[in-house]
Structures are given as structure tokens and as C-alpha cells.
Length: 557
Image 1 (spheres, helix red, strand yellow):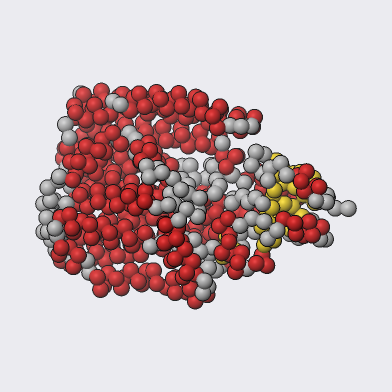
Image 2 (cartoon, helix red, strand yellow):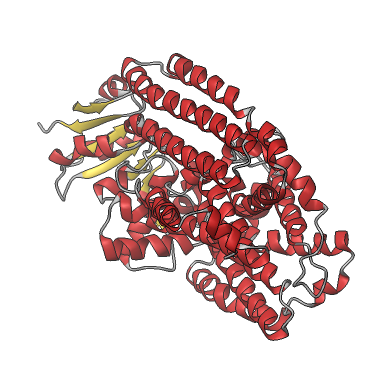
């Protein structure tokens, strides 16, 4: 580390910051119940994998599920084996991937530039609301972000070293990490880095870059990481290649069959609010980064920040063009954008920078008002209105915290206190993120199947048949430790149901026969359909009802 960095930040404060990083990364993993749909879906796939010992064919609710590769399923299944089945162990892999991203950008900033840039990059990333929130959610995109960041680390480092032996080793790491990215979420793990390298070569007019990528050994490493699972799952499931490579990649990108059609600008608000308070500096930081001079250690006049901008812009345009859009798709470029902003924060004039921070103060005030009126806009039932009211208090506190630390940051920058300003803004934003997460906890009963499972558990026997009729709760099988027979419900189960039709009931008209067969029965149904099923001749009592679902139990004669 540089002397100026050590003198600017006392060692006890650095230790405190390191502890804070670990606390923020891991503290909330177990106190919130799994939310639907993603947390319930991916945790249940991992639970069934751990239970059956089949690490080749992923299954969701007992049915084959090939929408995504298995990297996170493997990691969470191992976590369940080691630490038991819980919310903590379900979220552990995601949290470690988020922490890994933070460490990687700190390393990149230090090795490419200096220790100060690395530390600031870590704090920028850690205090970016969307990235921090995603680290505590069971979703595949944080795992993809880690492997993509590791691949970027390997490539960026390979272009910054003069020694050919070290260059090759960094490239081999990049190829292996690209394989990890493909096993995390499919072909985008290869498309993103390949497209970035190609486009950068055109922009920089560095055609030789394309031939310095260790294609033979690197390609062999990539296949060694990825091919075994793809071959095994295809041999055991001949339907896999067409569904995974054609349907899940090309058809999904080109069609709106997954009902995720959004306008082209869908990701821009997510980037803006998800990267606050640093978003106000991102545009000038990007402009400055595009015009950067090559790093001194690069024998090929390589510009790492320009490479990062091409990578980030390609991801943004790629998913903006796609017919299927989800907020989490942006996760892979949050880590490296933190490095772009960090480099800007270490070199830009503080007084000019302060005016970029000041607009966050009124944004915080707007956030307070929005949080205040949110319950009346979102809640349609008394029970949900109360939960949204409780969440609103936490969100107002978070918005106030953001406004206050932005004002303090503005003043510290005016007083030429760069590191104090960065730390105040970063730590204050971390506190705000924690307040937002506590607010989300208040409405978690509406998002999770835990309460439903608790209403079922006292009446559940080994011989009880479970059904989900025209409704499904992704987290319910995880909490019941049982799969559920679907009735007149398809959604993402279509492929699995076609391959194993004996495992579900296609028509709701056939459900009474299953219900009236000997033995205890419990069913999940739409929230106000109990009378409809009584009219179909089902003798039942209601065990649970809320705005999203109801649970009925068979009354034995």
C-alpha cells in the first residue's frame, strides 16, 4: 500500500471496515424466510439434489428442470449437507460470491493502479444498494457475477504483465472462470467475455489481442470445466440439449414467452437507483475512463477501464434488446463498474466532485415521501396494509440516512477530505441498505411459504397426499421437505410434465377423484376458491388463508 493511503486511513479504521464488510455480507443470511419465486425455486432444487444424491439431473418439485446449469445447485446442496437445510445455508453460496466480487475488485484496483483505488472500489461496490441486496438473495445472478468478475480479473491481469509465463497463467484462470460462468447461467458466461474481447480489439485496433488468448490450452481448460456435466446430463436426459441450448437461450432471447417483456429502457432506473450514491459520478467517470492512457505495466498499450466499459455496455445493450428482462440480469457489471468509479474518485478534483454528490440529498427527501405513501399504493388488504406500513418506517429511515450522509460527504469534499468523504458515504449507505433489508423483512410473510408450511405441519403425516391446485408456492416444498403433486398448473414445469406425465394431474376436473381416494389429503388452492371446491363435492376445512393462497384439508367421513 502507498504511504499516502496508510497515513490517510488509520489501521484501526481499516480493521473496522474489514469487519464491517464481513458483517454486511453475512449478517442477514438466516433471519429472513425464503421468498418466492427465486429463493424458493433454487433452494428446493438444491434440497432435492442433496436428498437424492443425484448431482447430474436437476429436479424442481420432483420434475426435471433444465432451465439453468447446476453450479449454484451443487454449491447449495453441499452447503445443506454440511450445515443442514436452513435459510442460512441456502444463501451462503450467494453471499460468498458477493464477498468474492468485493475482494476481486479490490485486488484489481490495487494491482492495476494502487491500493487506494482498490480499497475505494471495494467500498463503492459494497455500498451499492442493488449489489448488496442481491448478495442476500438466493439467485443465480450473483454467482454469475462472481465467475464473470474472476474471468475479467484473469484477462485484465494477463494484459497488464510483461512476463509471458504470468500472462499465460492469468489467461488460463480466465478460461477456467469462464467455464464457471457457463455452469452458473449458461452460454452468456462465454458470450460476454468473447464479445468484449472482439469489440475491444476493433475499437483499440489491436488485432493481435485476438491471437494472444491461449486458445488451445485455454479452450481445453474451459472444456475440462464445462463438458463433463453437459455430456452426462445429455446422456441421461436426451431431451436436454434441445431444451437448454435452443429453447432456453435462443427462443428465450427472441420471444416473450416467459412474460418478461419490458421497454428498452427497463434497466436504466435499476442501474441508477441500484448504484446510488455513486451513480451521479458514473457518467463523468466513464467519460474519463474511456480516454485513459494505457497502464504503464502493459506491453500492449492496454486500457483496462475502456475494456470494462465495453463489457458493461455490451451487457446492458444485450439484455435491453432481449425480449426477456429481469432486474438481476445487470449484476455481472456492477463489480467492474465500481472500479471505474473508484479510479475517478481517487483522481478527480474534490470540489468539483462534491457537486456530483449534492443531488443525492433531495433524492433522499423524495425517497422519504415515496416510502410514506407506498403502503396506500401497494396494499389491498388489511393484513398487507399493516405489513407495508411497518416496512414504510424502515424505508423512510433508510432514505433519511442516504440524504444525511450525502450532505456530510458534500461538506467533507469541500473541506478536501477525500477519504473521510468516501468512508462516510460508503458506511452510511451500508447502514441504509441494512434498514431497507429490515423493511423488506416486514413484508416477508407475504413473500414466503413458511407461514403456510407451519399451518400444514401439525396435520401432516407420512401418508398425507399433497396437492397444489391451479396455484403453486415455490418455497413450500422446501419448508415441508416434501414434493407436491401439481393440478392444472404448468408454468415452468411444462418440460418436466411432458417427460413424466404420471407425476401431475392435468385437469382440475380430475382432482375430486384424487381427493376422494382413501387417505389424508391437503391441498394448496387460490385464495378464495374453497367454496368452488365444496361445490365440486370436496369435504374440506380451511387451514390457512391469506391474500395469495389458501390451504384446505380433507374431512374424513
